[in-house]
Length: 280
Image (tube, rainbow, N blue to C red; front, side):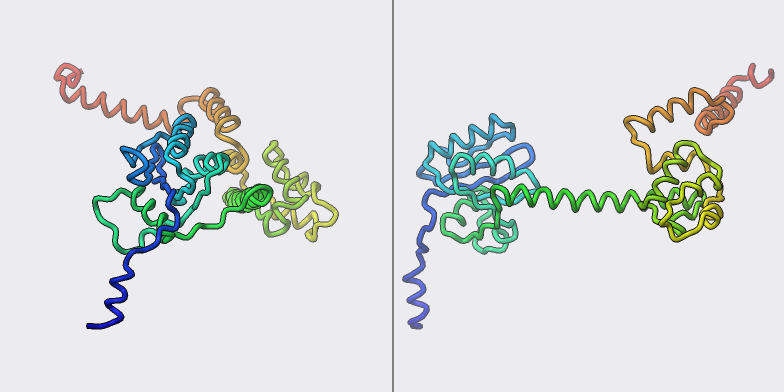
């Protein structure tokens, strides 16, 4: 008999690191919470995601004598319950789902919350770093700033695309986000169409001359291309659409043309089906 193998069999019982552990299987509309089997008649409970439901979940943990709670970082659904548990004095472990998935030995009849609670009670899950206080607030601001910069870059590309469709080569002679570029684009949106007048909006520090800018701004400015980068759907775009279809005659719109075509087709079908109409 191999002595090493017999030694491993004798020491098979793992010590319990967190005896008062609980787990939450986080979801969008429902959280599944699990505690030890000897702490409650029903160790697995389901709770909603409303604030009142989250308070009931925390109260249930308190009644069961829970001290540490583990949950997976599922999207952003874990943040409300995490903040509530942290404010109530619980030690919360936010773990990566891959850590629990790669551990062997899971049975198919065990729920996710029970499995997480079992792994956490034996100390097999590694908690992710969660900053608190001013560091958490600073990280939120930094991430929001990065997100806004990404959005700004995307909108600049949309603006450049709209100008290219009108054959306005502004991005070749000036910085679109600089003083000259913003002045010219605001003037175009306001209704200015004269290239010479637009070129006079040049900032003195722009490297291109007014003559070059005027040549670059000589294009085909179409109204259909102007509102795209600068209007919002809830205000100016909706008003433009309403005004466009209210003022223009029916013959100049594309959508009513399709409607009239469909009505002509239906009239032809009725004539074919009705002998009296076909003879007339």
